Length: 366
Image (spheres, rainbow, N blue to C red):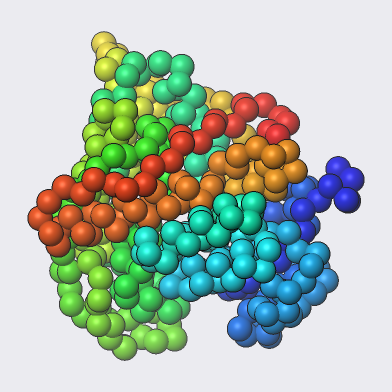
């Protein structure tokens, strides 16, 4: 690809997750990362040196750089919307780590500003573009399990305070198991089943205080401010029904991660926090599950494929797949599940989105 066809990307937020994104240009040659910014300039400098990024700068300098097309927003969740809005107001498209924001009220202006200025909003997760879930999408589209009827999804563990170096934000507003891991599961379900029309939910805080056992804050306690066991029931526009459970309160379980149940059979979906994994199908009358060869590539850690897809869409004038409308719909679902529990009623969603177009099964993808 010619250099002048590349899309210039500036990264804001140079923490742990930035490393895999900084590797993305080696896999997706449309991407050209030209600048790193962080509130800690030493951290930005270290990542820039490691990955040969030519410019280290402040956030303000990055936003003012006329050569940057996409701001890759890898900040902490509570400032995702703030940074994304600043990027859009500076005339740049933005792609954020998940979630899009911590509330509908702060995320909605992103879509409005992007539309008004002919810019793009993209958002993780992009794991649904990996070979595992794309294979499941193809199976559903090909009618292998008939009409999808229902689904289940489980993300359950005992929280990050035993392994994360700074786990406190997981238990503040904008954190919790649904806002932290729910986007992977909900985005996967939407990519397979389409948008949701209404939800109901039940939530609880099981342990009001959590003890950090990881370094460097071992021994400190966290006051929990957000539900840590969240169950949502989703009614899809298509008629399918799903139950989604996310929890930081469970020591162990044997539930599958995601299963899709159709009128003619079932699909076992791999971990939506990965790009590959094992896909299994059991059709009506089968005595056992059968492994299905993956039909698509990008089965290794391919974070950044969503940014690359957005870059190609910018060049071609088409819709990108990990788009702001879907990310906002995911946020609407998550917030509505919490509201449903608080208010004791179904919540009719105010948002919707298009089911993302499947990726081609062979190169070139774009």
